[in-house]
Amino acid sequence: MSRVGRYVVMGGVMDLAIYIALSLVPLLAERAGAGSVALGVIPVTWGAGYAATALLGGRISDRVSRTALMRLGLGLVAATCLAFRLGTRLWHFYAGLPVIALGMAFFWPALQAAIADESTPRTLGRHLGWFNVTWSAGKGFGVLGGGLLVGTAGRDGFLVAGGIAAVLLFLSPRVPRGGGRGAPLAAGRGAVPGRVRERFRVSALLANFAAFGLGTTVINQYPDWNAALSRGGGAYGVVVGGIFLAQTLGFAVLLARPDWSYRRGVHLAPQLFCAAAAVGLAGRGAPWALLPCSAAIGFGFAISYFSSIYYSLHSDVSRGGRAGLHETVLGTGHVVVPFLAGAAAHLAGTPRAVYPFAAGVVLLSAAAQGILLRGVWGRGAGPGS
Figure: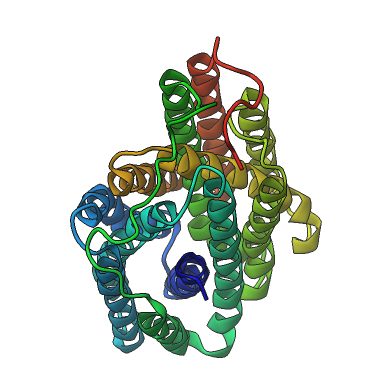
């Protein structure tokens, strides 16, 4: 397998491990009596750590061996999953989640920058597309697996997550410092002007903040609404896992259409559908009846994330640092939106309130992006290949 192929596979398997663990945490916490506020604190405890360290992790990866940093991150995640299995109290989750966040901060920016290092202007979009498909599939199956494992294995599910992360230590290639940091990606004939690239990059960062804030709100708050409807972990897995499986299909669609980049309409319209569908999750319909909402949210996530990572890495300088900023922004979304949504649900006296709140964040973000992109190209002009 090629080096970039290994990186792509590692992204999918790592997210499988992480989201088995991160899905088990709120489900087991809800069983222990955690309410909306306590559930809202869960993403804060790891999202704050991730937001605070991802940029640093990316910048470090510009100076040391990216693969060595990835392996350090994998070790931290595996060790924390083992600790979760041995823990018995709710506070053990709050203590361990920041360590998982640090492991992610060492792993993700370094991996993303390493994929760009192995790319050319013609292959960057394709490599990132396959990376997005694999990590999204891993995330979707991780959420689904966490929902199923909570009823069959309980805390033993953390051993599954930790074992998967540990296996990746043997898959990671060994690349010396500075190895594989290849061809220019943003220069040359037909290159997108720097001003246009920067406008789209900032816009995509805003979109990703709102999208991941909504996603984490659903992952961590849906157990409360799910319990109010007297449903089990399987229903949670269908609704929430459906979002991320739809996101995977969205990435596959974008992978097949390389002309999507640097288009205002393609960038903004899915966010509006995403906000409307988020409100639909507050309904009382059967889990399978909510799958259209899951699908709309998933595709909105796909375009927001793909835009953010592509526009961040479509650069010839500090790819690790730019990937770290991309991860820092989505990590901040993980913290701010779910916490405020949980507080809104507490004040409103119903767990349903988190969904219109998060949808409002997406709409405000889209409005700001519309202003930012006014007067900038509306048709594809980037390499997007």
